Length: 160
Image (cartoon, rainbow, N blue to C red; front, side):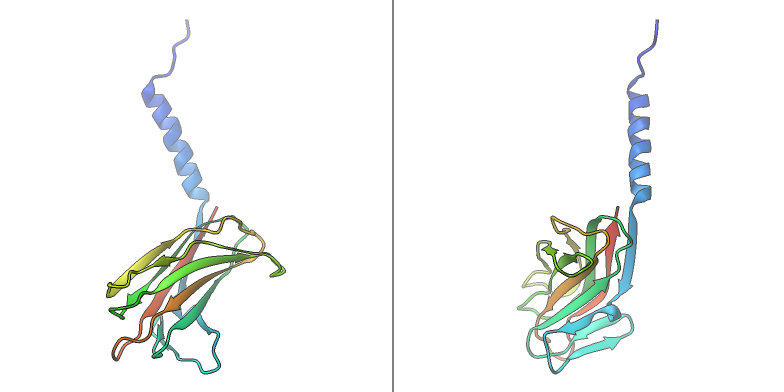
């Protein structure tokens, strides 16, 4: 008569599967100084230490490129400081094919309009990703609040 494995054997197999899945995920992190300012003829981006800061009195747009390593994009994060008490930092992910002919966008996530301080935004991946394409984290930076501007300190993508 054969013995049916108990629940502990099933949990052990599930745990091994989860560890194997997590081991195949690869995260690539970048300093905020990799970001560039978009849509401007007069840049107001300031690079200091590992941060890219927006010192403009108007809304500023940052593009933070990330090199894909051939996997499917499963997660992205952006971290920084929101120093405007009445407007927020908002970011989303854009995935493009290798020819920049097709693109897909993830939902935008915000630090919150009434928020002042450090943030980490968990950015949902686009519905379609292109393993041999490119990824850009786009952030809308609020006008500078006082003497300091809001900033992106780091960002990361995770591929499977």
